[in-house]
Length: 228
Ligand code: 6GU
Image (cartoon, rainbow, N blue to C red):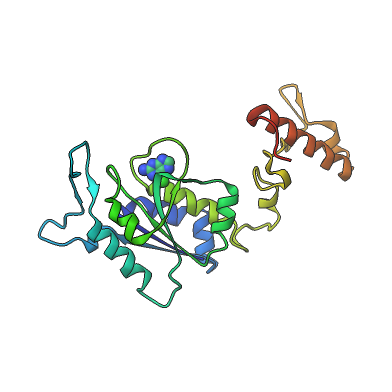
């Protein structure tokens, strides 16, 4: 799985790339992340990438030229498949686990990050990206959203998680897409709070039933009724 990130601030990704599960995936040869600075496609003495909106209004917009040319150059740079182009935008399709699972089937994702007040509309009209939002709140730029998408997708790449079953038990991944059940480790008692007896029983059908019930209860409590 290959990720290409197009951003004005590639350095935001440096710690993430070298410190996380992503690094393990890169080291295992299961994924690669290629960072591209949009400013490399800017022209003129000032390498300008943004300008004021026609018609007035606050903030600055990313100009179409550097963005469109950057995407075209990156998409055709080598013999990698052109991939799916995602544009980070609070107006996009909201990310959830089914969407993440769908993205994880792709061989290559291109993540286009904006800053300031967004992109000139012609970026969208020409490139026809899939616009993606990570939730209904406003970020200062798409970088944190792109990192979120990479983080969620990379853990679904086969071989990235040590234990292949571990993501199937996570919140939103289980059958019915409930929240995850409560979990306990040692000690058996801590400050008067005891681990539920059933989890110590060794009775696996009973443990599975307790977990299912706990997941449903938590989901109903926190999110309204579970889906299934
Ligand atoms: Cl993808 N970008 C920005 N700027 N804000 C957001 C977002 C993306 N998703 C939620 N808020």
